[in-house]
Image (cartoon, rainbow, N blue to C red; front, side, top):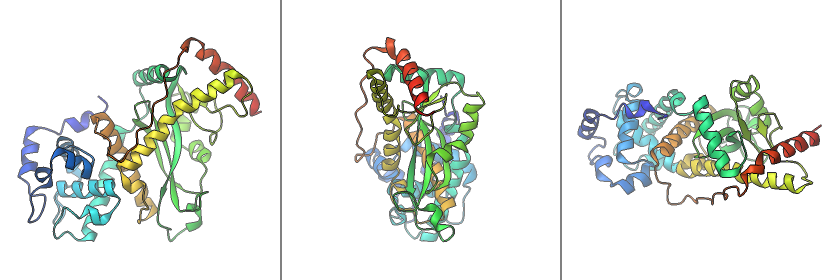
Length: 339
C-alpha cells in the first residue's frame, strides 16, 4: 500500500494503552463515549484510524504539559473538521484556548513532517496504473493527474497585506493541487499569497522541474489558467472542429475530478472552507496537514461527511479507439492557437 507507516503503529498494545489513557478531564474518553458514526461526524475518522493517527504522531507529540498525544490529536482533528477553535474545545474540560492552539500547531507540524509518506509523485508502476484508470474513464491516453488551484481564505495579515488579496477581493493562500482519478492528492504547493497566478505557482514548483527534466512520464490535465506544455494538456481555445469540441468536453469532464477533490477536501476539513485566523505560514502548515489527512481518508475509504455533495462522474468513453487521434489533432490545434 501507499502508507505502510500508518498501519505499522496500530498494534494491540498501543490500542490498549490508548484506551487506558484518560483523554478528557472529568469526562469519559470520546473514543469510547461516541459511536462510530459520531466519531466520523466530529473527527472525520473511525475509531481504529484515530488510534493509528495517534500512534503515527506520538513520537513527535510526547506529553506536553497537561495534554497527552491523543488529546492533542483529538483537539486538532476537531478543529480541522469544524474550522472553529470553540468546537475543538467542546469535548475537553479545563483546556485553555491557548493550549488548544498550541496543540493544533504541534499536530499540524507533525502531520506535515510525515507528508512524504502520503503525498508523493507516482512511481513508474503507480503511474502506469493511473494512466489506465484515466483512460478507462475518458479515453484520453497518458493521463496521470489533474491540476488546479484553490484559495483558502485567511484573516488580513499584518505584513504585505496587499499580496494576499486575490482576484475575488479577499485575502487568501493560493494552493496548487494535483490529484488522481480516485482523488488521492499526489502533489501540493501551499506557500503562495492569494494574488499569485496559478501559472507562476506551477512554473516555480518542483513538479514543473520533474516534468520538464523528464523524470515523470505522463500528462496532466489543467484549465486555461495554465500554459499548454508537452506534459500539460489544456482546453483548445475557440474550438473549430467536432474533434476539438469533443476533446474539450472529454478534457473538462475528466478534469472535473480535481474540482470534486477540492470540494471534498474543504467540506471534510471545514477549516479550509472558512476564514483561518492565524499567521499565513501557520495556515500553510494546516493546509498540508489536511491534505495528509485527506489521503488517509481516501486510502481508508472513510465515508464522506453528510453535507458533501458527490458530483456525478462523467460517463466512460464510448469509442476509445479514436481517442489517441483526437488528442493528437487537438494538441496540434492547441499548439497552433498559442503561437
